[in-house]
Length: 447
Image 1 (cartoon, rainbow, N blue to C red):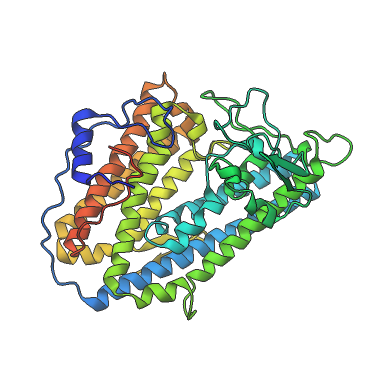
Image 2 (cartoon, helix red, strand yellow; image 1 turned 120 degrees about the horizontal axis):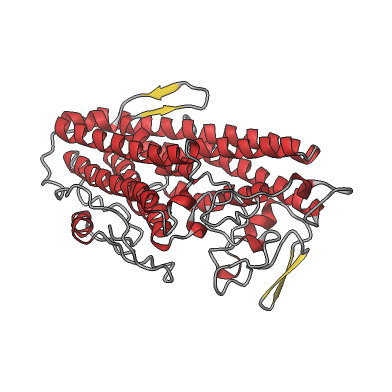
């Protein structure tokens, strides 16, 4: 993947106020993506203070503590979701469906704060797709509306696993008679299409909410609880298989999170944490800063907001079935802030804090540290406006990006601009620690 130097990216933003089309979505029209951020200077030549190796090692060790806590909370929340799903299947009703949906939304909060650990840590990045891949072609999984628009050229877009115990893809017929985690995992990227996503949070989200057929109008998916009834009153068809699918997908989510929580557990000789802590501390610091910058820039500002904004595309909204996207974006950014400050508020309300990147940067250059903390606060404030729009005003992300919603689009542009600016601060902080050429991932976007 080619990467544009960040200084050039920021200059392009301040002059052109426009972005290029996303390579994976050539049909998206190129429109203005974000407003001019205050022109940010290119990272200054490194003027580094000697970093205490013991202090750096302590920061990396605490980073691993943060990861263990976040993934542990994500696992606990997923287990709560699994209990709510079991209750729904035991007694399908409006009340048990509502509880399962609330448990899914609660499970997203800690998981999204884990995504900052993806970039730079292959054990996370190689694993993440099975849990959080999106957007997905719903027709692979279950029934869809008659006017359903799927990804062009996707051979599995209308496979409907729930309705069909065997699936024809080209010349191949696949046995889907027994729905379990192994089958579902094998169907991801079926036929070579990334839109074929059979597992993870978004497959479960679709099974709980159904399609959001409202476009840029108010409202989320509205699947009835009767889709999970068997016998009198049942709707949707093939309900036994739908029940099996939801149960298997949720169990697989829990299993996957158990694996990752184990990778960050302290005192395990051969897990990923042990390998990370055995590396030179500078390697760990680079991974921390690269993860922060890449999530801020290419992933959150680019893939998750810029793409949907440019195309006014509700299909490119992340939590599109539940209209929970405002929370997803907020907690992604919060994860970046957590890593820099060395703190994380756990789902039980306790605060985990310890040696931080901020403390290292402050010793090297107090002004650079203060500026980055201000940028992180500004980004959270911009994303809080997105949350307030949804929670207080009832105007969700899919409405904000509507072609005729100028004020709503500005909320999204302001959030993108804040993330771009904080990425410049992350690169500057890296130079202060003697880490040059950080090159956060742009995901081939220009800003």
